Length: 536
Image (cartoon, rainbow, N blue to C red; front, top):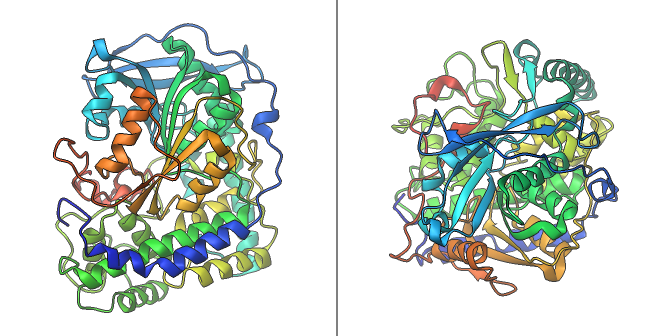
């Protein structure tokens, strides 16, 4: 793909999804919001921010950044009880005289490393933003360098296949989820039951206090937006700016969660197909892309499809579906077309991404970030009949993709799991306006999720809609980047209903990621086969 995604011809691609987008919006509007109690808002045990500062020193892995640690209670209802240490990193403002303060960031996940996000900040944030802020990231509790949720690889590797086909499969999964939960809790210790986003939001408040900032500046992406939303509920008067990019909607019950995800990934796949039909750069140009896709899915179901470089086991159908998600998140349409062409008998691309999807791991232990989702989302499915009904709706909405493999792989893990922070409508009583952003064709956090969050916030939020593709809008175009910078630096908000047309480039703005992005490289469950592949 060329250095830009957007030309006039793409208007025809956008028209292809008009009917689906309309149906998607109507569907989401009709789905009921969860009636779960607002546990985050009702919890009176907010605790006190951790006392003491952070001692900073050059990071061993990235000497240009500073690293530090901060002790926080395992259980914030017992602020004087046992503690863990959070790992943090920061890059100081490039222009000390223009410094506004610290900008705390979270890259999403659940399970994304804020420390590594700081390491990569020069390629992810504009120089303008970095001149005015210390960029501060942290590995949330239960993640990476901050006491990760740890399980025995010997137990983890016995995962049943994610998509259940019978009551027997359901019973097998329920028993396995219980066994895995017991193992992970034993390996992880007391922290296992306290990795929900409310606890993380309290950690953010402790970080703000330890940094010596009077109010918080926060930028969160994807699952990081849920951390921001929970902070806004708990500490409404402590916000200076809060920018939430590609939002989670924490008000959706299990049915709405799965169906909106299915609609979003189908829409993103439809956009890819439209691009292939128009662009000669597509490795499948001139072919029936949907027929190729169906052929690959059938071959996977028959156990006859192998991923380049992985010869010891065939791909599963859900691993094929992962191609459709990860190839549209960047988006990385050209690479996706090359991968599908390779799976259909063509030549693999020079750089083959790691095989996605949950799969066996080597070593003694493995980290399980899904636990965070289980503590934030109550996803009750009582039996196979209910599960099959949910899958049937997803399949009807997404005839090509069938389902979104991300929540479908996580759902069985959460069967029977206690939920500390169940879904509820967002309740924010502060005065600081909040900036939301989302692309129209995001396969992972549907645009309608941000629209729903904006509706819940009412007059206190502005949603910036990027009329393009992919996950995370900051850095994609000038019109989807500058408004975030202006808001964070100068408190200038876009107008209500702001929309950003594709192709808003500007030679004065150094775009951050010209290369196609294929997000599997950084995922802990990624296959080690392609570990040598260059990271985006």
